[in-house]
Length: 250
View 1 (cartoon, helix red, strand yellow):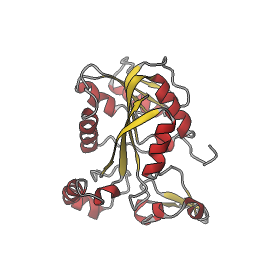
View 2: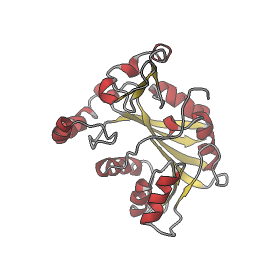
View 3: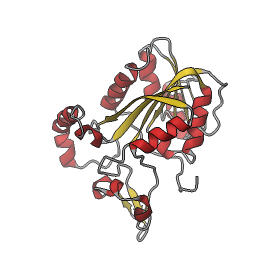
View 4: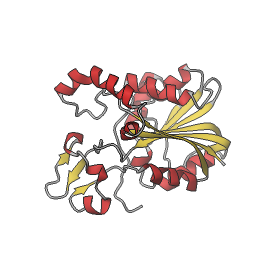
């Protein structure tokens, strides 16, 4: 795509976040018996959680070390394998649903990945897409300074997502994408989906980034309660860290 995005990223598989996102998924998919692919599954924690809820879940992951973590926990299991979203190793119409959980922003060709997801879904199958929200005032992945090469963590990126990319790229390197809601929804539709739900998800303050300060760790329980309220307040909820799109293959 020419935007300098390489495969990579941190995990969202902290306990509260897994529980929260699986609850959201279960509102749109009847998990018992559903065949679900977690595309970009990391070490497979969401696969485990969805299987516990009765789904026939499996995962693919590009980073071999993460697949190794799954295999260490589940020797010979085979539900998580190495794979590439640009060329999925499944037949057309294999799955009832596909989960893309904070993954699309990290793949080199996001449009190709969405087209591949559409291919492996059954007609009427569901895409569950969690991805960064540019209304959130911090760049959660951080950026790299073009001048010094130093990484600027989330705390040093306040309001950066609101700066037009043409300006921001003069000063920093974005190693991950961040989508405006209308932009992301348009991409999903262009890949052959009808969008049925589009909402915003607030963080659980479990130090997913590994950059959380000691003060924030102490304040995390209070921050979670505030976030739970903010997620239900019109306009304010649009500032959530992620957006959730639920779309059906046409």
